[in-house]
Length: 44
Length: 276
Length: 222
Image (cartoon, rainbow over all chains, first blue to last red; front, side, top):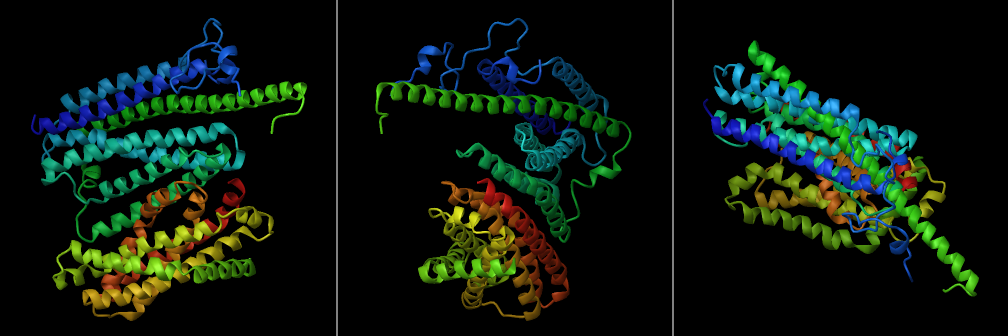
């Protein structure tokens, strides 16, 4: 594949960024969930 | 001044360092996270479509005649840009709804959507820049789409900065809502004027791709839209729930502080003169 | 509403005149920006002259940030905000008045900077009609937008740093339009510049209306 480096960087970077953000959101979600009693939530 | 909170409320301190509220009683089935059946299904679909995208985008679709394999970056770049705009639009609508209804859910949605949009803005800029290097020789061309995306990124950063302010929550939400509402006209104006400006000097570079794409490449692009769209939605759902929990947590903190105050006042009036 | 606007505009301008901060600090600062550009770019006069329109409007924008910050600061002192809310003044009128005051200050600064650019960069004036109209339209656009965004950050500790971050991206189209219009005028092809003038006028109207509508909410909600 030509330009393999750029494609790897682009796809890899996007995946890394989304993965890191998703991990951060989920972790924050867990931390906050521990503080907020279940009645205050709107999902289950 | 004593702080009875630390003795009466059990539980491990939260990551923020505040004393934790009474943790959710061990009621069976209470999730300690922001997931739900719906979001899990969404997540699985998203993962599936990502796999499809990898197959179509990297393996099954051919290289472009002119751009060779760098066209494969477009399968992420173009959908990412679209969903960045979608996120801005959602923020604007949520801001308007908040100004109308004043319910915290809309404020949470506005903030969550802007943050997710920022992530996709970064991806748009990154993939666009990496596409530009082999194609045009430079990492940055002052192309209309890249330039207006860069400006839009600063708009989002500014909006998120405003949201982080340390003021009364209603005031913060009001200001953020007005700013959020203005996002849509700002985006449109910036887009149009940058395009007009750059068209004076440059034939459009990235836009050229869109109408001429066809065949397997078109399929790959469509799959790209599907995958990015599902990922965007999944991220938005979870980020919204986090924002909602943040709001609840702040509210509970406030209630706790008020209760503390009242308890103290009750005790001191019982003892005689209230302290100045 | 217009009476309220005149009242507020008069007050803002009187405060500015009495404090003399604009004349003593903002004006010299904007000239300083012009001089800095000469240091940054080779004072080979041809380069400066060619870039004059862009440099001019960039300097105007920096000066505008200061002017708007000061305009917002007027209402931040104790109780002024509450007084405005309770006074029964039409919020749209307050907005128009403040924006008008900012526009007047900006026009003065622009004239000064214009002289500066002619003297320091060796610019030859041409296309006066386009220059005046574009200048006016851009000024109104900047004043209206700035007053609205000034209200968004008014009263905050971080006002000084947040205002530029919020306002400058929004003013980018104004910068584009004003620069192109001026370039066209100075190059002797005003026909190229009038469409950009249209953009500037459109932006001026848009933000004037938006500000008038939103000011009430911002006054209340903060």
